[in-house]
Structure formats: C-alpha cells, structure tokens
Image 1 (cartoon, helix red, strand yellow):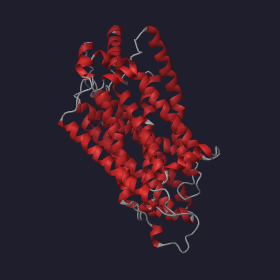
Image 2 (cartoon, rainbow, N blue to C red):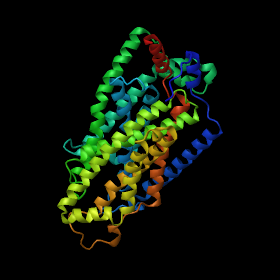
Image 3 (cartoon, rainbow, N blue to C red):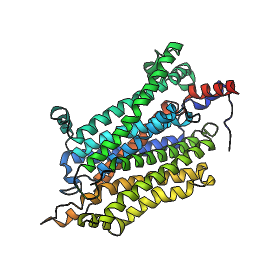
Length: 439
C-alpha cells in the first residue's frame, strides 16, 4: 500500500490551491448549467399551469420530487459521517476527505430544501409554515431540523476554511483577481494568531458534537414523515434506523466517487492515496451489510404476516410492476458493491469508483421505491378511481426538474472546487509537521 509522501509547504500549497478550469471543466460546467436551465424552464411551466403538469394524483401525491428529497437528505448525512465522527475520533487519515464530505453535505441539503418548495406547487405556501405551523406535525419537525442542519453544515465548512482563505489572500497574484474580493470579504479578519486558532478549534469541536445528533435527527424525522402515514410498507417502527443506515451508505458512496473524480482531475494521487480508498472501502462494506440487514428486516416481517394490503405491496416489489427496479436497487446498490469491495483488489481506486457509483445510483432508485409503490397501495380500497390512479410515471416536467436539481448539486460542488481548495492546505501541512515531529 502506498505511503503519504512528504512535501514542502510551498509544494503542498501549489498543488492544492484552486485551479482554473480547462476545456473539460468548461464543457462540464456548461452541461450542468444547461440541465439546470431546462429544469428551471420546467419549473416555470409548473408554476404557471400548476401541479397538473405532473403525473401525481390523489394516490401518488408524493412522486419523484419526494424521492429526490429523501435522496438528498441521505447524501447530506455524509457531513457528519466523515467530518464530525472522524474528527472527534481523531482518525489520522481523514484530512483529504473532510472538506469533500462537507461540501457534498451543504450542496445536498440546499437542494433538499428547494425540492420541497417545488413539491408544494405554490411556493408562497412556505409562509404558512411560519404563520400556521403546528409543532405536533412531523413536517414541522423536518423543517426545523433541516434548517438547523443546513446552518451547522455551512458554519462548519466556513470555520474550517478560514486558514486556507488567509493563504489564498496571500496568493492573489497566482490566483488572479476574479475571486480576490470574495476571499478578502470572507477572511480578512483571520490573522491565524494562537488565540484565534484556539477559538477555531474549540468551535469546530462543539459544532462536530452538535452535528452528530442533528444529522441523526434529520433522517430519523424524515423517516417519521412516512412511518406516521398509515400505508402498507411504511407502517414500521424501524424506519428511523432503516433510513439512517441507508443514508450512511449512500453518503459514503458519494464521498468515494468524489474522491476518485478529484484525484483524477486535479492530479491529487499524492494526497488522496490508495490507502484512503482501502479505508473507505472497509467502511463501505460495513455500511452496506448494515443496510442490507435492515432491508431484510423491513421486508421479512411484513412478508411473514402477509396481511392483504402488505401482500399486494410486497408482490408488486418482488415479482410485479416494480420488481425490475427493486432487484436492481438491491443488487446494484448493495450486494454487488459488497462483493467488489470485500476483497483487497476491489478496494483499489478504479474498483472503488465503480462500487461507489453503483451505491449512489442504487440508492436513488431505492428512494423512488420507498415512495411510489406504497402510495399506489392504500389500506382503503379504491372505488370508482380512474385507471391512471393505479399507475405513476413522472412527466417530462418532473424528470427535467429532478435532473436540474441533481445538476444543481454538482454545480455547487464544481463551483466550490474552482474557488476554494478541495483539500485543506493548512491541515495537510499541519499533519505533515506533526508526523515529522512524532517520528
């Protein structure tokens, strides 16, 4: 296994400072902007004509928008997994991964909030949450915990950036003028004194301690939105643990994919090494096995009881209309990644990238399956309902808005990588100095 190489502070700073986009970067950014514009056009059409442009109805009142919301909330949990837990546990190899996880968390929770507004149909109804909010409603709990988690994640990202912003202000001649005003606005006050550093480290520790329970709450409360709605497939007391374990898995998969992409694009092989992929691979296997256990538990008990509504729901998943998507999500999202990553050769960068993509893609379809099949199988029988109420497939407007939101998350991450170091320069230099002193 490769070892971390020692470089001078000047070399580390030069390698990790933000880089200008090349041709591939401009093409990538243009594609994301175009997809976002298409999504914005579809949303404007939805605003003008109403939710009638979607294929949602009396039964499937939560469609692909809520699936996307749950997916974004799941990925956002990665901020606590990597940053808070690894920092509090003093994991020595965490430095190249923490900022990647922090920006994924911030970008995902941003669009989780926005997609809820899209699902409302009329965005002005958001005001009612503050004028007519009912604290006994799980929806209100979700609003509170998502807002809290967004603020905490943004604050954690900003505080950890401060020493690097000071370096970027000093390197304005190399970075150019476009973002120099932004750097000065964000971090001119930071001098790096011992007193400031003491306050910063204490603040990071406090935020990390607070982040972990809030991160658990955000996905637990989201699961309660489903579990407190009386429908087959959601009538479960294990939904909190089921959602949290799935969120940890997809979050870790997203970090692995981001690690690989940034390693390749920015030539960071000396900083994001095979050792990091090996460690994350072991974590990925553990999380996949944990989530697989909760999946078995979630389906086995209702299958054993086989009440009539549950029977129709499970039949639709295992052998009916949703069977291809269901088995795709189980195999591609959990079982195949486990078989790849459980072996040492599968924890190499290329294999880990494939496994990470599988986990993320499988997780998105899994969230779709949590929402749609259940809504199509209400406990109360359907009488005189139109045939279209028994089926749901998103309209092009729904697909466009969903694709636009996914592109928006990637656009935030891309913009961040252009403006700020994707790996902490200050922490990398500090870690190297501490390693030299201890040896």
